[in-house]
Image (cartoon, rainbow, N blue to C red; front, top):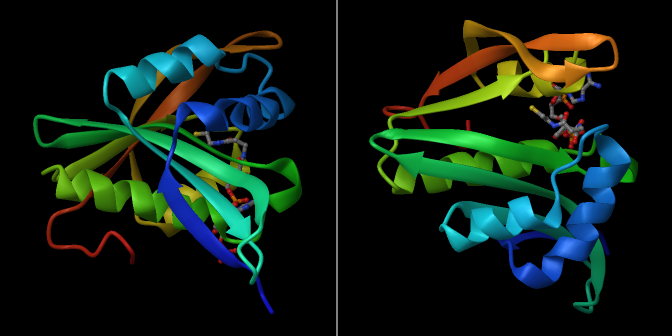
Length: 162
Ligand SMILES: CC(C)(COP(=O)(O)OP(=O)(O)OC[C@H]1O[C@@H](n2cnc3c(N)ncnc32)[C@H](O)[C@@H]1OP(=O)(O)O)[C@@H](O)C(=O)NCCC(=O)NCCS
């Protein structure tokens, strides 16, 4: 049988698996302390795991974090395991986070992304985000700094799942 993906709240016990994915992905990965701080202050963390038909957990396929306040929400982190990319995990997690933002009263969602990150840009644009600004030199890069594009999506009047 095809394993069913399960999206559930991120908890402290997920951090070792999250850090493994984080460190395999980024030159400057978030530390355990940053994730713990996010959970402590009440940001919305979600993980996606794939369980077998018998309920056996098969590890984390991805995770994301979102903050919501004052009618806005921000995607702070969204990452899928390198061996799970291109299977729809990122889209499921993004939609789950946006649904939580909407429940928290957010009317718009924002995020920052490197313009060189074709996979992330492809996902966000496919999910209705539009570029609304540039933060110059926002990210560290191998040769100096790289800009961030600021992307926005309306949540009101739209189904976050579509
Ligand atoms: C960006 C990321 C989260 C996407 O997750 P994913 O699980 O691979 O993406 P999905 O399989 O859900 O793809 C959803 C859509 O994203 C787009 N997409 C995904 N990979 C892409 C790629 N390599 N190039 C262009 N578009 C891509 C497509 O529109 C895709 O839809 P389609 O499959 O119907 O064409 C993942 O590549 C990742 O973790 N990257 C490293 C961390 C990162 O860059 N996070 C974002 C920081 S802002």
